[in-house]
Length: 335
Image (tube, rainbow, N blue to C red; front, side, top):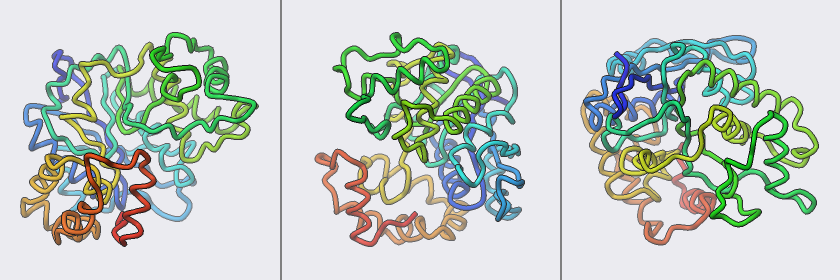
């Protein structure tokens, strides 16, 4: 059965899962979903890239075994998809191409697997007719040039795809401030139809990658390509920044932790407590102990003892890279 938003509208939950780190993270996400949104009778889809020419050196699927069984034990369903455009060369493209495998014309919520459910996701009032995405993001793209600033770069992209930029601007921010322009983290996003959304996402991303154009000539697109295309896709479907009804996302309801050292470094005491509570049951612990970051940081208490004391959560560095570098210097960058 599909989950229901607070409005009563049914929707599907989508994650990308493949062999390796994403599968372990998905186990944590699903354990937290069961603990904190028990009334969300979600049809959870684990979008899994199939082997093919875009994965020349390996089979990306999670092999049969206890971990795959555990994910399915949480009620999740694996669904395979073909990597036509991205694959191993750009794994972030999985979240774009995987949408084609979801049920057509059924609203969806995509979550990165490095997400912890910390509150009642079933009570979030999604308006699937107005797509949106995470604004827990730094100004990582574009890199303004002396001859071309934020406004010109973003306007060139909107013009290219026949979109109106004026309605997307946050006019509370000054000209040439990166937050004035629609820019998302792709850790969560939602829409009315995954196939339509995914096709447009792929069309825009592939077009930008294959022919960046003059405005993007000096810009780096890897790994930012998905975050470059996503605002354009959201705007094309009449969406925009998340409103007050979505405040629980990246708030009291979800936490996009990115990796375990960062979680212990900067997230609240409550988030750490949720992580350690949902990973404590024997059936979860037995599996997660095989993943080195979880084994050391969660079960050997190194996250609390070694990483957490490195930072004052009330006075964190502004840039995430500074936090990462400090953890690396301390020898606890386990990912």
